[in-house]
Each structure stands twice: as structure tokens, then as C-alpha cells.
Amino acid sequence: MYAGKLIFSQVMEHLPLHIFHQCVGRYQGDFKVKDFSCLDHYLCLTFAQLTYRESLRDIEACLRAQKSKLYHMGIRSSVSRNNLANANKVRDWRIYADLAHSLIQIARRLYAKDSFGLELENTVYALDATTIDLCLSMFPWANFRRNKGAIKLHTLLDLRGNIPTFIQISDGKLHDVNILDVLPLEAGAFYIMDRGYLDFKRLFMISQANAFFVTRAKSNFKFRRVYSHQTDRQAGMICDQSIMLTGFYSVKNYPEKLRRVKYYDAENDKTLVFLTNNFTLPAKTIADLYRCRWQVELFFKWIKQNLRIKTFYGTSENAVKVQIWTAVSAYLLVAIMKKRLKIKASLYTILQVLSVTIFEKMPILQAVEEAEYITEKGANCKQMFLFK
Image 1 (cartoon, helix red, strand yellow):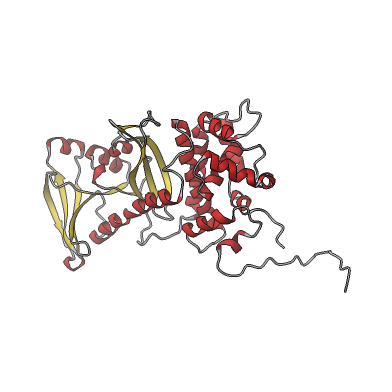
Image 2: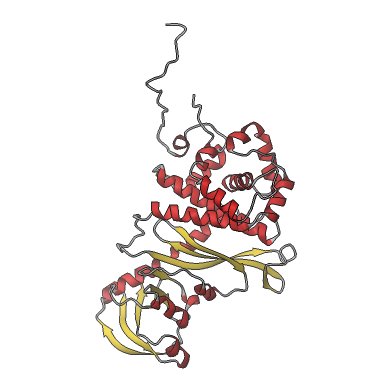
């Protein structure tokens, strides 16, 4: 019989508690708190994410049904809807945001050598945003349209391991391109974006930071050809050109040369035009890089299906941000655990298994792997036999 920790506790072993307590202290999260600490709050919300709880009542009912196991889960206080609701409202969401950023650094180191489909030494990021619809009468702070509320989740995804490295939550009115003003830039990295981010002044800032971008061109942008490079038409490359912008404002915003790559996608019967400031990679690699941008779309679809970020446990802005950042950290914890334990199963499979075994006392590898997992008896066992 396995006498170890609960599945939930084994997942939480990958949470760096010293960093969590630093985040709590930074924003005085436990100041004058006598009951239901920030750690209790975080553990309850992570439990809700891993087990797909729909409401505060749902969380309370499930945890109270397993009251004898709460101490072994790390929860030291009684769980009630009032405690959860109040914590969602008043606990600073930046505590959980800073924790998520710390987990991002851990996850990126673990996935640094993973391949994303292209043999490229540079770090490759995909940038995009997704809209989460909200009821304007319940979330009056989430301005979007006249009769509709929403928030936007701007995400910069490291394609090695699909780890979100930058997340910004804004109201639905903020245009996607504005996020480039606060985006952290890394020299030598590639930033893959759709044409919603086509702003030559901001793209020139990326170029000045010695980073590279790949984006789609709009049909009406004006330019003149400087030089045409050889292309492989059998691979779908129609043209590969060095160009200069000729628009009155665009030439002021981006005074240097750009590379224009025109590609025919036979599979979807589409002709695509890409713009980049990289002149060394083959034209086909530029087209393949943009194809990898689809990973960020799949990431948004995945987290909306497998994490609780579409329905919320509170209506205040703080409560919504707390829940989103907790969801992100839960995703990262599972990704870190998968890499450290060398679990072959997908993140989807791991989350599905965790949702039904979270209170079990069994090795986590036994739960998520198909093969038989046997707990070996210690060689130095001193248990005496009554009968021989």
C-alpha cells in the first residue's frame, strides 16, 4: 500500500514556496490576516483549475467533502464561499502575476532545448491576443462595446514548449498593436505576428533592438523594389525582394530596407506576402516561421477548453485577474512537472487524469502513465514478522 502524499500535494511540490512567500511579502498579502492566508487562497483556486470547478459553491462543497485531507493538501484554514469571495476581491492580483512570471522562468529553462519544428538556434516567439467575452451588467469595468463587455489576453508564446513568456490583461477596447509599446524585446529573437500588428514605427523599434520580426503585409502598402533574390518556385516561393517603403509616413517611421517574401500556399490555395527585417534566412524558412504562429492560436484554444478563464468566480477586476493568473500558473506547474518527471503523456491527458485522482494517495507516475508502476520496498526495512 502506498503511504505517500496526495496527488495534489505531489503537483504542489513543484511550486517554489520561497518565491511565493516573497511575492506575498512584496504586496503585503497576509497583512493583518488571521485566517485563510494567501497560500490557502492560491491552493483552493489551483484545486479549482485542476478539477474544473464551476463556482465558489462548487469549490466549497468539494473541499468540505474531503475535510480530513485538507491539511495534507497544505490548506490550513476552513474553506467557505465568504472566505474565497473576499480573498478574490481584496488580495492583490500582482501576487499571483509575479508568481506566474517566476514559474515562466523555470519552465523556459526546462524547455530551452526542445524543438518546435524548425532547426533554428534563435528564440522564436508568437504574439497574439484573444478576447474573453463578459456580461457588461455584471462586469461594468470591462469596456468593449455599447452593450457588451470583454477583456483581452495579450500573450507572447515561446514556441519551444509553448510557454507563455509575457501576458498582459487589458480591456477589450485596446488595439492589439499597442501591446508592442510594452513588449520586452530580446536581441536575436524572432517575433511572429499577424498583420494586425503592422505598425512601421513600432516595427522599427524591434529592428533597433537587434531583434527580428515576421509579419503579413497589407494589400495597400506602398514600396519600391531595390533588389530581387533568386527563389525556388517549386517550393511555392514566388518572389524574394529587398524593398524600401515609399509612403509619406511609413518611410519616416521605417527608413531602412525591408525584405518582402511572396509565397503560394498550395494546400490552402492562398498567396501570402510576408515582411521581415531578416535578410539571412532562406525565404522558405521565413514562410515556415509564420506558419508556426498558429501555435499561439492553438494555445488560446487549449487554455479556454481546459482551464477556467471563460467563467469567473468573482465580478470585480481584481477577482478576474486573480483567476486568470492562477490559471496560467496551474498550466505552468503541470508543464514543469511533466518535464521534471519525464512524463510522456500530453498536458491534456495529464489534466484529465489529475481532475479525477486529485485526492488519491498514489505515485503520480502511476496515475498518468499507461505502464505499470510498482513502488519498491525499501531494502533496509526493519519490519519484523510475526509468523514465518
